[in-house]
Length: 201
Image (cartoon, rainbow, N blue to C red; front, top):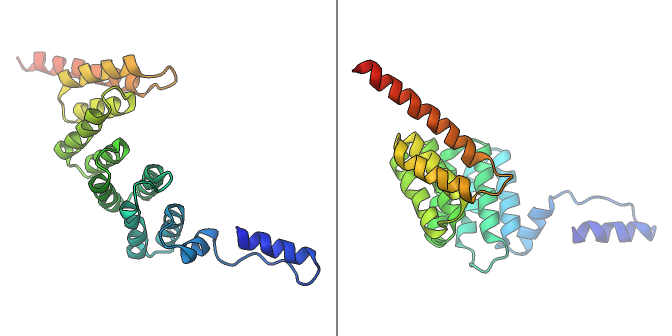
């Protein structure tokens, strides 16, 4: 960005024509300092989109080794995970969130991301353990409670899921509908199970 502004200023003097830098700002920033979180995210994402997933993951995984006082580090790692999930690359997203929980074991979004990846890969019991960890760290967080409730639904632990989701509904802000919707779906499944149970007897 600074380089682009410099080019604009020089162009205004009439000494040369304006030309936009041919490299994305993140690439330039990373060349200046190879440990800037936003630049690692940007360039890692670009590398992935250019079909170089190994180079991309080297950069994205490096985020998990940055100092804890790196500004907005948890949000940046979460965005990196979301990027990989958008690509449906659950295995690499799992790698990222696993490393993140090792380096930042008290950050609940890492545990929630890890749980989501494990669930997508069919590892339900591990997914349940991970989201339980997030709830243990923040027991009054409606989002994590809703995620735990839904993971329990998928594990067919309906009674515990009902208790958890009812708590999530009580704690959720008015504009957060997911816990209520999850509870509605759970009750449908519970009724279906009851019907099937009656039919089999």
